[in-house]
Length: 298
Image (cartoon, rainbow, N blue to C red; front, side, top):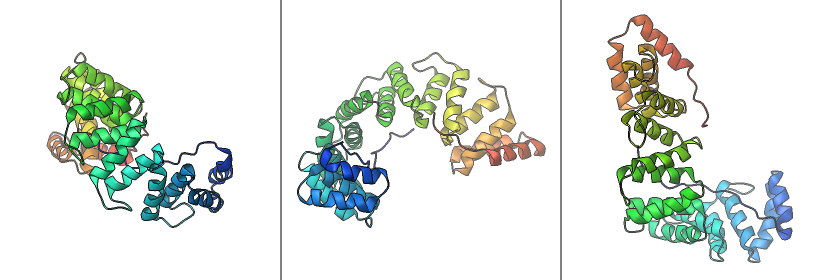
């Protein structure tokens, strides 16, 4: 399972301030034209909150044509006044090259400023950049530091990545028990990658007692969200009858779902198990796969 990469998104965040109340009400009512009328004069006068929200409107095309260059301009104005959300958003722009030339070093600079103000998403992003060596020298210890700061605030992606580095021993001593602890926190927020990893640790007995029933439970949670790796591993448990009753039809169904997503292991496993099945069993498995619908995270 790969380390999660940088989060890229814009989130509208409006403090409740008297001079922004009209704009806030307009946004809540979906009246972007009225919001723009309120924010633009304030932004031009140097109000950092209005500048940030105006940037979000341009980034998302809310009440104005989507314009990343204009969004970056307003984010910068707010970021230079110390606006944490704007610093994070400007970091996103530089990392993705939207509205500004792609520049990882500049992206890391703005993420760092927001991260130092306690922004969990910026902390996660900065950690991911240290892990990959984007705009900064690759440094697993520094990545772990920022992942930990974000994870402690409940950032599920950071909790997952922290679990992975604990399991791999990157930047910190390998500790499967600690890895499972972080995976469980992310899994509790519905993170399918973390659910898969807990299933893997249960199957291997890493950080927890080996238990195929628990492995099947966690694989299933991830597989039901469409995670191809979990679908393949759950299928394998059905082939071997480990933690579940042996069932080639269920195995073929899960392999088939992974295969439909282009997973090479799913394709191989599906074709292999089909050789052991009757035409009627294959037809049942294919029907189940057609009827399958992914479940929301839980």
